[in-house]
Length: 544
Image 1 (tube, rainbow, N blue to C red):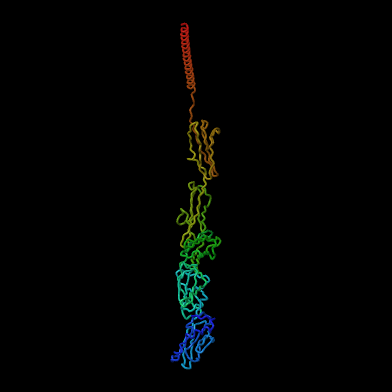
Image 2 (cartoon, helix red, strand yellow):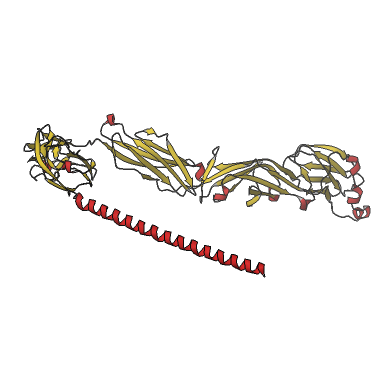
């Protein structure tokens, strides 16, 4: 029972007689007794409490209160005395003692229990950082600190994630004013960016008071998953100076992938033109690297770093930058029919070269006497360079341009047989390098036929043509004969046929006319006879 500190001490006097034994009992010689009221009080920390010590001593008794708390006497009577204990902040067990002249001494003890709502709450995460990242699957420590919250046997500490209770513990007894409770939950993906808080509950309802609660300021937790393996770096071992290559870096099993950072460095320089993509728990970065031709040959390091939750995974690869130009393939001397031409292939010192068709003992040289058949012939020089267990290859090709004088053979037939009146084309082609010009001129120099153009043939085209092909190396001449087949016309049969035709036609026309005239005269005479007969019949009827 809690006694309010503003209750006047005199108001307690009416209670005391109820607590005292009857006078008859005292006179019968009962033993000396001492009472404390209220028994075992429960008070708020910092409040005052008034304790009344009373006795059954029948005479004026000496009454005192033994306590380590500051006290003062409020009031007293023959067999009672009240004491005020001020600013009570801790539990205490004072006892009342009585010296009775007739019954010697006696005492009794009470227990003052101080209660205090949880005043100050604090949550600490370990490791204690501004932004705490905990690996998924790892236990982490949460320390809940509470100031106040007494009596401790009635104080329970709860760890919450949002509004969900994760774990709870009773606060240990006999702790100082500030108590600590530690929880060791296992980090999960659901914990990421969740607010954790400590919640204290002091339940004094069984003691006639109420439930006192308080919570700490929420603390956001960040969980992450980062595989122990390094990222997968895809890059070539070799990079030719002056060329570009695409490289990529990929890391999977990342959570949360959107919080991860990926970085590519090339030769100690951070690549800025990087394309970063996310898919599920996979983070991927692609970039294009290039080594300038003037940098020369060197080994340069390509590094990929993936960071999440304060941890980093790194993978590095050495790329060899090399210079490997195409080999040179040259031909010596004028390349003309009948001349000897030497082909030579050269490459950088470490490269091995081979010309197709070259002898094994001298693979970089070929010597041959060229002719028309070699014109357009393709020679290829292959250069091989071995770097980091890889064999590189570069090729250089050369097409022979063999010069030779004009030649007229199959491309310019010697005889042409045509029918007069048909459309024909006079064709005469020549081989040669440079390409020759070709002309076909008739021997008569009169009715020549144009070369290469369709033309209607007449008997005047019959005759001999001189075809000439010429280039800077010479000239070729060929005689071509054009035979035009035709027939002469005999006019006598034609004239006789025409006269006979005209005679027959005139006879037929005369006979036709006579037949027509006779038919017309006969028809007229029949019509006249019919008319005369009809007139006679009409006249005879009139007379009758």
